Amino acid sequence: MAYGWISIHRKIQDNIIWNDKPFNRGAAWIDLIMLANHENKKIIFNGSMVEIKRGEKITSLRKLSERWGWSRGKTKKFLNLLKDENMIEFKTDHQKTTYKIVNYNVYQNEDLDKRATEKPLNDQQKATEKPLNDTNNNINNYNNVNNNNCVGQSELNLDDPKLAELIKLYQDCGFGLISPYSAKVLSDYMNAYSFPWVKEAIQIAEQNNIRTLAYINGILKKKKAGTDKPRNNNFKKKETYYRPKQEEVKQNNQFNSFAKMQEEFKKMRENNGKI
Image (cartoon, rainbow, N blue to C red; front, side):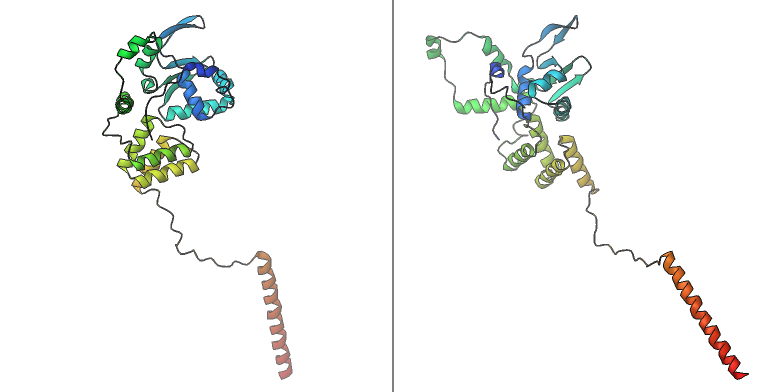
């Protein structure tokens, strides 16, 4: 999976295609990033001055639900999913919902913000500007992602086909658009356990409809501890004995009594014959 920059202007949010509803989770995630403030600023909320920092946003579950064409329950569940994946932090009350994009600089570098406010170069400036090599661009983009996310290049091998397969499986199983942080966690899981174990844990989490990294980690820990050993279906079945019903017991007793009576009469006739 390739990492690198693409520029998306916030004006795309005004496009009729972008506002097609309902949103999928990938579009909702990108929407949260674009809605977040790109710089610190103060606003008046409920008559008080509130400072909103870079990467944060004050909104509400109702507004997000209407914006995405979702129910409030689905919206809150999605925010909780992002929180579990360490992609956002958020808190909500009866007045507002405030969220913060974790590692906002991974998705929006400060240099891009500055570039958006700079005046465009004229033809003479463009001619004297040194062109950038595409290969160097890719390397810089890769390093920017890793450095902003506290991930060293030696720690996260993006060319590893096994990691690429896990990332694809992670997204195909409905965990959402993977972040550099989540990719690093999957890489750590694979190094700590093994590729087949992590792959199986992702599939189990998808089957149980609990799509979080914490749940995957729990599955791996249980497997390592041996607490998830399959049940032995080859055990000897417990022998059971037939117990007759009360009605059958009663009938048998009656039959036995009748037979015993016949036996007594037979003995009496024999004794009478002897007299």
